[in-house]
Amino acid sequence: MNTMFQYYGLFIFLLASFMVVCIRTGKLSVPAAMAAGLTGLLVFAGAGYPGIAMLGTFFVLGTLATSHKKNVKAAITAEGAHPEKRKASQVFANGGAAALMALMMVIDPLHGGLYELMLAGSLASATADTLSSELGTVYGRRFFNILTFRKEPKGLDGVVSLEGTLLGAAGAAVIAVVYALAEEFDQRMAFIVIAGILGNLMDSVLGAALERKHYIGNDAVNFGNTLFAALVAGVCSWLWW
Image (tube, rainbow, N blue to C red; front, top):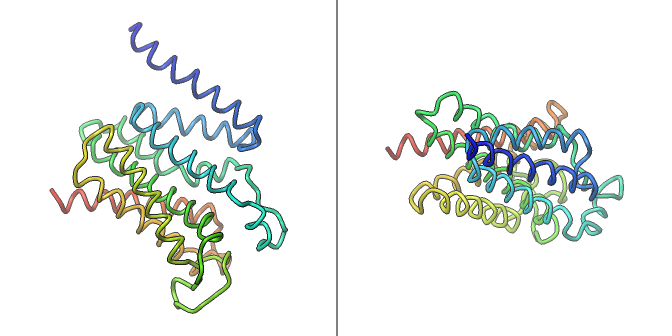
């Protein structure tokens, strides 16, 4: 009992400290910090510290990518600014699928390994999407619509670049390595990378087909691509075994 109390007590302390730091540094709004706290609790309840390590890796990489050369990115926006402070809806959009998979680990522990893999796939997609969007805008050379393959200006929904896609794939690979450090270096790493890449591409497809036409918003696109990636990871595991 004491060991369990210490296990959860340490995490809650670290989580609360993280929330305070994010609010004070302007990375998260107060509602967003609360949403991040809830997401973290769910992920920890299901996947423990390995799940939190993957979630934290996504947050750190995403924060660094968002802050990188923000003046360059601000120049291509209509508002002339590149916001860094995340809203609660954005937190749930990127981490909601992971939280859902963690909840399934609690409800159905018999298949916990599968749900953990799907959780990793969803975070690989979230990481890939963030890095490809934030860094691809800076380092991409040729930009095109993912549906028509016609050249279009960078920054538009559904517009991608080779450089951004590769940077996104690298982000997915980092999540796969974090997962493997907790589990094992095997074929599941490839499943996570595949899920991250396909999820990132799905984000662009949804952006070009639906978001650009204002049928759905960016938060729906992000939740859709992470949930799709989780399913891809699950299907890969099912086909392999």
